[in-house]
Image (tube, rainbow, N blue to C red; front, side, top):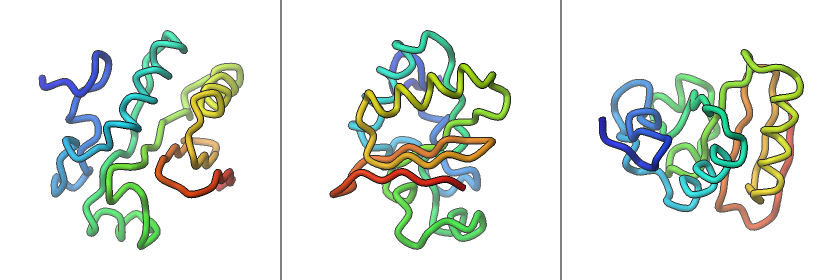
Length: 121
């Protein structure tokens, strides 16, 4: 299995429709995710990384989604305790992700914004 970092494989970030490879992820976001994984000390479940335009449309993503250019990920949190969810969100702020979107099942993290943003789904 080809690895992106010590804890993340390239395959974890590929578009779910198979039309875009995980190799297109931004090195900056990968560095932040690897640091998050080390600081948290537990696996981080990637539910969405790079998206092909077709997959992005199918999931209702924005036409300017950062997922299209490898600048965003979604982390699955539906299986986590409230304390673990809190810790992931705290780490996202500490690691200075530019965009943080929070839902009951996932946390969206992105980079490349000119100003910080926080939203809820």
